Length: 281
Image (cartoon, rainbow, N blue to C red; front, top):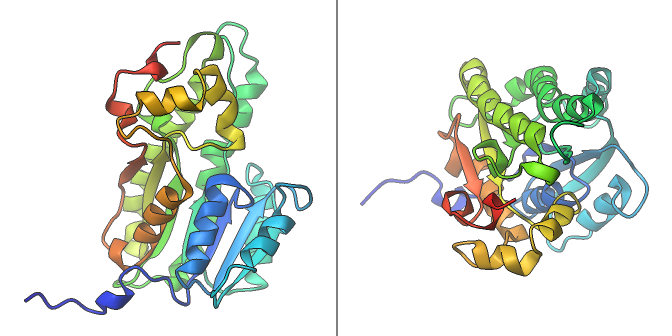
């Protein structure tokens, strides 16, 4: 018989403090929800806007109404493409907690269009948020993460990337070249952070989703033939669901993921290995 330590707590986040950028909707909101349901003490969600249908305030209200939770959600508006605003976000988080167990860098930007007339501002927008912003989040929150982490229970950085970081999915009239490049950079940034921050008891991993119906993805889903077409092309015959992101996030951030560091986990049903509709633009 194997001697497991606290197996009943293997996938729990009791007492943990998490920050999720881009946490007011979509994949970020799925992660924040999962953390609270897994026992997290405080889940801070950040996005650029506080008000509106997809702003922070509505997300926090919904999160705090989750049945059976012992923790709470807090919302802080911030532009995590801006280094000064990230520094301000650190100070705002410190008003509530003196350490941070989990940092999910989920906020992202995309742009699509034909190659030759690509405006330079679009590349700057994508790279500022998807690469430089993620680096600065890790850099500026590292002291808080280090304060929380131990050799047996490290703090976690999860970078939400995309399968676009390991494929060439979209070229032509609706090409997303710089988005794909930014996500490839995010994958390699994770590996760099794993070695840089591992000795400080901070692990770093990437989650690379495929298509999940969301505001960011829905336009491209329609261009590619619609939701049903993409389901038919996928080896699992469906698109991503909230539980798919919830499961991998809780795994990586719980005791079950203590020794996982520098890895890319793709959540796409195997679509990146399939020759299907994604390659036919």
